[in-house]
Image 1: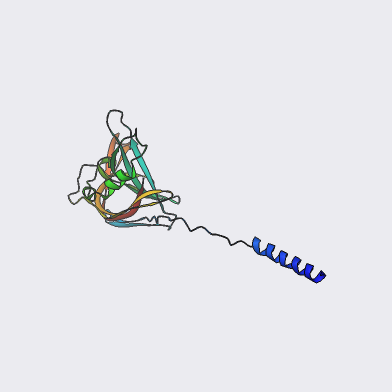
Image 2: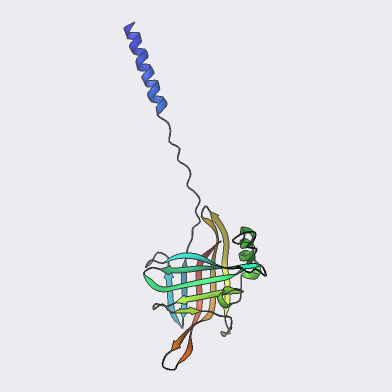
Amino acid sequence: MKYLVRSLAVLSLGVVVFSCNKREIIPPPEPKVDLKNHFYGKLNGSDVELTQNVNGYTGSSEVDLIINAATLDSATYYSTFSSPQSLQKISVGHGSLVFDWGSSERPTLATFESFYLSGLNQEPDVSLNGLNGFTVTYTDGVGRAWKSNSNHSYPQESVEYNSMALESDAKGDYAKFKVSFNTYVYHTYYDNIQDIYLTDSILITDAVYTGWYKR
């Protein structure tokens, strides 16, 4: 009888230990959009290249919203490639997306997708601040900003998206793209000696920028 009691006790213990040994369930990783940036171009004939994760260069995205009480509102999105280790950076933008601020604080995903995938917007004109087309701002190594405008002074001026794709993850919706462009950019400054404002220019040719706009 004592032997039987001991056997039952050991069996009960084994059951308890087995029931506590639960299998760990590891959730699958959340999908994440692969965001890449790169720039190459000739600035007044000299090669300039910025590469992601080299010398601290990473990409970011911003949006300018114009809220107008009289008419519909608009948004212009920008993709910027910069580094905390250098003043040199480049930013491109493309707008504008028309939307209703009263209905949503940003353009809807459908509006965002329709604008950037539209065939009409794959070869936009260069425009001032990207309000009605494409814009480029190049910041040189001493921090001077050189901006495109809408004067179309370069006869071979062109902009063409080589690729454009919409992707989403838990952090947002993105228009991922590669764009080629040729255009002048300008820097206006005050000359103390001549007591006038002067404007210098840089011709950017054979430029290819890889980046993304975040809705």
